[in-house]
Amino acid sequence: MTGFEHETVAHDKRYAGPIFSVFTDKVTMSGGHTATRDVVQAKGAVGVVALDEVGRVALICQYRHAVSARLWELPAGLRDVAGEELVAGAARELAEEADLRAGRWDLLVDLHTSPGFTDESIRLFLARELTPVPDEERHHRTDEEADIELAWFDLDEAVAMIFRGEITNAAAVGGLFAAARARDEGWATLRPV
Image 1 (tube, one colour):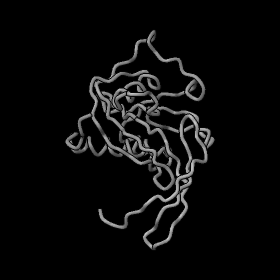
Image 2 (cartoon, rainbow, N blue to C red):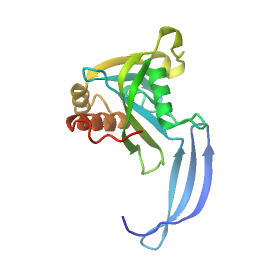
Image 3 (cartoon, rainbow, N blue to C red):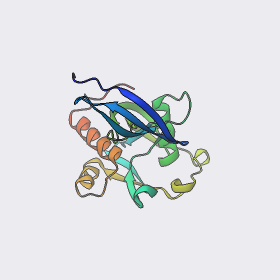
Image 4 (spheres, helix red, strand yellow):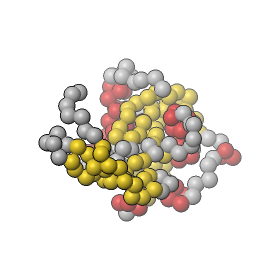
């Protein structure tokens, strides 16, 4: 890609928290002027499309306060463990949120969740050869994770749920579409972790 080189000429921190920071930047624009842009700088995330041997996907339903609703989502979470490999973070989230382990991992897709205002990205993995986490090793869930509901859906039904407006989480939409396409192409498009 070619085009105008945008330069940040001012960078002011407005808020710094444990999950994200907010900055106001002045950026040069192609018309020769500068524009002010607020940017949310995030930790990034990992997520998992977990498929069982009969083609069902594990989805979780949990409360999301920002939209005041319970959403169907993929097991996912922040990249908030220092030095943790991305696939290890995905495996941790799968175990914590869905009580599952995977014997096979592939890289599915990378997404920028909302690049109009945040640098947040999520790397989505495909997990297969699933086994349950033993009861005595399961993660103790708290806060909004305490009432996570886990359900299994045929992958094609999960894609249909997107079109019916029942799955609206951006990472889930992207991950489910990518998994369905990869499956239809015999998994040839998958990347190694």
